[in-house]
Length: 337
Ligand SMILES: [Zn+2]
View 1 (tube, rainbow, N blue to C red):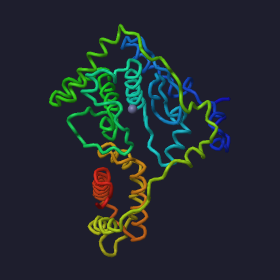
View 2 (cartoon, rainbow, N blue to C red):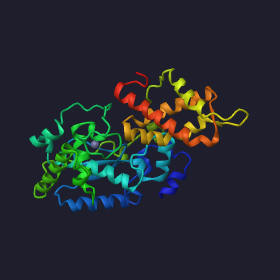
View 3 (cartoon, protein in one colour):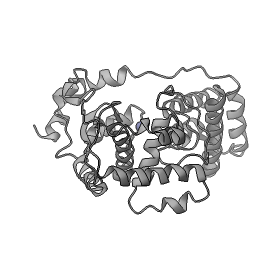
View 4 (cartoon, rainbow, N blue to C red):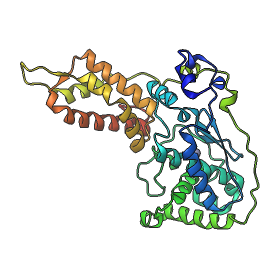
């Protein structure tokens, strides 16, 4: 069945995902994966990852198979994902390559059991360290490389390694120069450089390529998949009203002039705020989404308006406001601690 036919049916999002015929070959992912394979070839290793479509990015611990989110395979799925208010992890070719290099870092770690190497443990930490989804990154910490959004290297030693590896692998990137004044991050990259030279002649210790939630096996539909996603808690402190009011009081239209709806502006910023606030603070996109929707609702309830010529100022004020709240939540567990 051609892809167009599949997504023209009115009920495609209610069919089991396994019946949608999703695959990498023949989709927009194919040329990106081909480019990635050329980068893998250039490393000259004896291990090659298996790539498959699943629900999210990842490598099952102790395997060499890379899971790619299925929604990246077809444009109608990307549109649906965005309509559900979720961030695309792989928003273009370069972004997909960033994630693939990161996942390859995990593959190499598991294939050669690098995590058992004393030097690896000394630089990155023990792989047995608890894996906390709610990690609290320190933005711009000089001990880590910068790569995926949300200061992801700070999540866990395994992620620190994967991020370091991805930065090391980026073609044409002068990491020695970029991290020249960050000795701890640089030491990790130098370790990666040395180990990757040594691994070229070594056979992998692990070649297990088990998959998890392969799209070919998913019995639930897209609507069910999105429906069961956890929604963040939706309790917001009353004190946010005062802050919101103060932003728009300063930007209010002159008496007698028509104002523009503040809530409309707040809503229009949702997607960008989700992505950028996560990138720079580590505040999860789905939390930002809930916060922005709350602020839009309160703007309506409070009948806030602004002078239409001052939209740029309002955008900056809202952005810095939401970023500051995000930082508070990451570090203190609450918007108004
Ligand atoms: Zn990872």
